[in-house]
Length: 255
Image 1 (cartoon, one colour):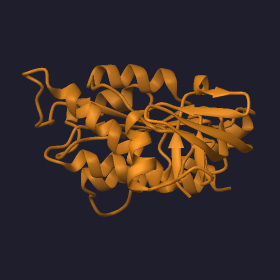
Image 2 (tube, helix red, strand yellow):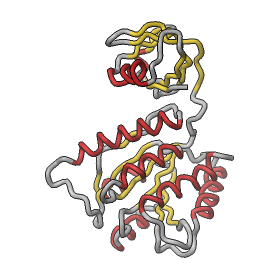
Image 3 (cartoon, one colour):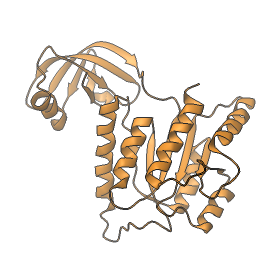
Image 4 (cartoon, one colour):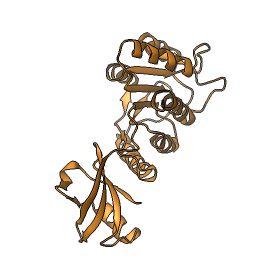
């Protein structure tokens, strides 16, 4: 079943009015759907709808709502990936796979060892492309929201933002020898449960190729982040985030 996304403002009573030209083209010319066919629609906020195509115009598609339900496939746990910006085309793979695994938001971070530069101010065009990658991945795995790929931030901004906005900050550090991510998650979950305050949002901090510098690692630990290892082997930056996310979802979401 094909899935499309609209804003809540496009939903009026029992009808939804699709106006995005790309969606209309995809619906009518690529999928070759016609009046009387059914599609699924998400409002990207809370609900998903099973709809019948009532009318297809050049600049608008009118849908009749047959069923309305709260998101069935959207994780309750909100996980943000703070990703040290990698080189070449690795970021698209990182976004695609983490979206499939249930990420809520992805924040590109410029660190000391980041090779990519923004000397010509063109980086935001990459962010726009990455957001499209997120949207395409969502349609494939049929989630209810399109995870946001935000504008880039500095390492210092990451420290402030991750600590202020999340219940738990996980620093996945290749030099950590004692605490595994499993141990860290079980310990922090037990603390939260004892306080009657369940973990609802988690930040994952992943460095670029070469990881975080020694000074950056010290700053992260000093900020109060929970330091953990992903295992005995050192993972590539494009692998580390999705491995950590899968473990977090298993421990905190699938219980």
